[in-house]
Image 1: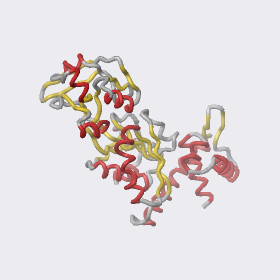
Image 2: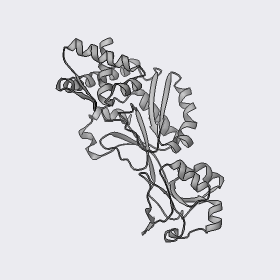
Image 3: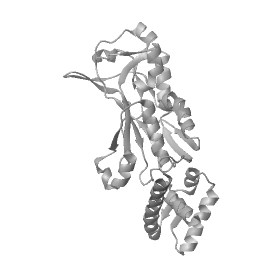
Length: 319
């Protein structure tokens, strides 16, 4: 069993690129990880990792050993899954990354249901508007809203929400309600400066198409800031229904030009490349999907994804 734990530790060190990140994702101290690697190298009588100021680099022997160790750990996990059966209680920890606003409004309020359903599971939720480096942060599931920009990683589209032009009711009372996309240029636009934002948008209505470049003096790098600016009546924004769902329901925020369509906002669950997809991760993905109440569809980030992952791993993601 100690040898198996050492194999798992070595695999995680290679995938994360550091002892400290591997230790954090495994829920142990860094000295335990260092000791496991040192013991493994001593038993094999070969250097597996080169340590430098730039980080860790596997030796040729380490690269070859990693491929075999990763295969062994995947087979062990699959064997455990078969032995335990579907009714076995899940235990351990799931590390999830997500957008701050989406998580605050839709994910975190629903987590009690997940924790009640799986009393032996713990969750680490990593929040940020910028997509985190999944492997380096030891993330098991990355929830990403908008366009999928993580290449060559298995991903599942969980849901989609419409995008709207939104503003506070008070703002529209003062500035007027636009009737066409071109009229938006007369309004103060609050720009979301991360991926999924921008000032140029294309509106569609039946066979008609209108591309508009929006003007405004305020640009914000976090959706939370965009929300607050809209609620304060600073101007209009383009955002998914998810980002303003409470205020749209209450009437505090209004959606305009709803007879024109904008590209929808997708929600993706991404599994880090090379990471073994655990039953815990699959359970969390299923829970998010069920919570949002949308039909699922297994997809991959790029058409070349099949070159990186075996059919059995992709099938496991879709199950």
